[in-house]
Length: 472
Image (cartoon, rainbow, N blue to C red):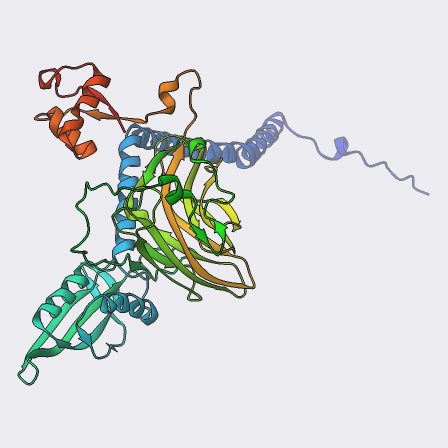
């Protein structure tokens, strides 16, 4: 048998020197290609991407630095825009709702002697105003009465808390009863879809009742003599109950009065259509001549409901954190309602603070709430006072509100701090002691108070820019 030869690669393939070099070069090329394909190119793409991000972030940094350089002006612009928004929300209807419009018009009609025969509503329409689509509605009011009554009614339309635009006025003389008749066409505008909804508040608001002037009322500075002032203020009985039962002693309240409800616009605002009410002024008061008379009728079916006193237009700002914020409440009867205050900070955030969980007194009582602890930046504004009724209950009644005030810490070692509150005033060109006294006290004779506190002897000491301490 023939012996098989062993296979030997060396014996079969013999590579020349040049071939070996070429193979080595090929291996090097393959290795280089693999390195370039799977390592170098991805790394290069990643570096390019990071370079682009670096350029982007540098540009963003420059832009943000420019924004931060204008932070104060941007914040002021933001506050101005919020003020404009608040003003628009107060002047126009948040949405077209016949119930809201009727509620407002009835308040105006009731305060006028002009006879309004009926209200005729058109279908809501979209009207383009300066490029902004606004929902509008026309209301036609046939009327009959005297010319003076018509003028009075039109003037009341002008003072409405929501803008009512008179687009057409028809007058015809009725010689049978010496009167005029015709119709008034009114257009209302809605901000529906332009601004976000106002949360849990449905803006069915009425301006505070306009009281007819009493020709027998005493002049403004008249001080009525009271035989027994303590009896008048503290011992008026209602159904046998003492008026100041469970109340805080007035001597213990040393607050800074921020609103006495003597004048200005104040509105009633319900949280839903199940809440009715009205706001007017009452002569029974704790501070000044008037208090706020708050009628409420709250039905809380599936959730709690609220009746609000909207005081946003009074622009009550609290510059520094107080120990407490309180007010006087006059109750005619016991009630389960909760009384509280609503605050708004500089960024538009809303905070509620409870002042009294239910009413368990009759007569005047001072109640107070602690300012929200999570507000770190002042000033803040008091936006509303509210009455809240919990779910599944119904209640109605009347309370009086007066003397909204802030209580600040007092320095016990300085008795002067507990007697007088002060404010500051910057002297302007043309100011005199008399004009400053009239501005702060209503009387030029009070100028001596300013002179004593500021160690000045006359108008020659008043320089523009000088800061005066003004006792309140």
